[in-house]
Image (cartoon, rainbow, N blue to C red; front, side):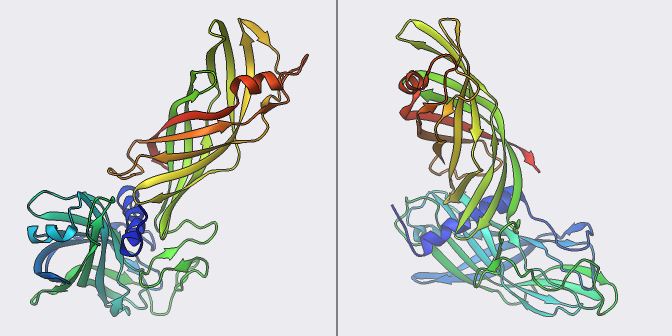
Length: 413
């Protein structure tokens, strides 16, 4: 089912949540060690159409640098844990799992950066909805970068909050719930402080107090989308182990794949996430039986064409890999069949991989099975003493072949 409007927006939020929670975020600045501030309890009163005012308790934690320097951009990370009362559950329309976002108002005071900041949109990862009781959601992301213009102390404080939650799958009957939350009186909302040193009007060589001119800003979110060749704020290079099996339909046999590896770059580009990477697979030894009694062996080499490219949307990965399939060391009935050094498919096989439908959603650090059904193109340039193209094409090539791959997280690059 295709969903539009607010539900479509949640696809981007899901992708952001995956990356923010699993990949982590970094500080922009002069390299000063980060300081974890204790979470601040902030009480809100939240309202939504057709829903009575709700008391929502949050804990907001900020990670700020231990210190900053005049003229050097500083960025902090935020985690908002919101506890929604049981009375909110009926408004979710029976959703079993929700994703969403939290837009947190922020102010900064001191060191020449006094005023309201662009409210950051923090991502809420897929969260199971209880049958009864409170629903606790956790939103994580970055605060907008700020550049101190003079020495002093910067104080970061929270103001109003907007929570958007909706089904992470298509199992709910209600539109996403949008809660507008006002901070209860008598609270400062102070989150963290850090000192700034240096001289007014100075900048650190090699830094700039202006935003890069490449990339683009998503309206009302403050999130900058990477331009070509850039690694954006929600980007990380990840190495995976890749293994699995492919069933060749005509031969009615399985080919063991890997273990190989894929070095990927995962990037958030609203409204969907992006994944691309270099897939490297070792040669595979294939064994099959012709005419139900003639044993055969062959080595299959995989020659990738370009990168594996795909998207992450609503917690699901869809990616395309293109590769030539080369045959070597072919033996029929134990006797070598000289196919030559250039025996491969006339064009790359196009393999459209897809992960399981959520829940659970794709997380980069979670083992991810992916499947595909693909066509093996005809073979060419096979045979040294006699032409073998037609024979191998007739025996191997055709549609209906299946591939089952497992992506296992190895580490960050």
